[in-house]
Length: 145
Image (cartoon, rainbow, N blue to C red; front, side, top):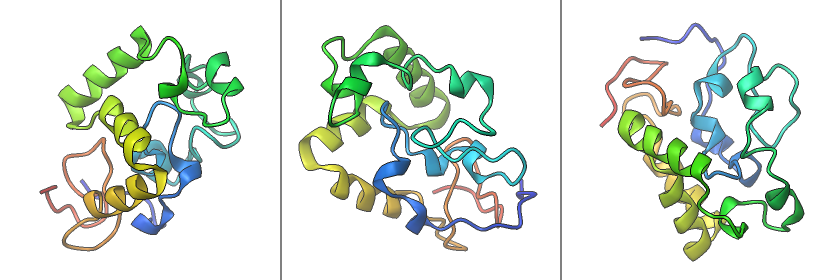
């Protein structure tokens, strides 16, 4: 399925501000990659975001807001039920784990995680970023490897 977007996003867009408190790389989200009603990621303004994103329990967690690090692994309730459910859904549907992402960030640091993500989510055919929510590249329709 090709994207209806004319803006092509590269893996160079992946930065620390694009990593959500739950460990999601917002650059991989179809909401970030689409042209209409584009979401700018969990750590950015709530303008244009769908209601389920603006009201996200994880994004709005007071424990995370109090922390200097702003990742769920700093919370005394980690991993909470909401994060476990989100992780289970993403592992099942999209072959990606928020809990594994957070563990990697905690152990190896955000910079190392970002470099790993740039390699993992780059389309091997066209070089643009892959969406975690699609089985094929939204730009060239090549299947994910």
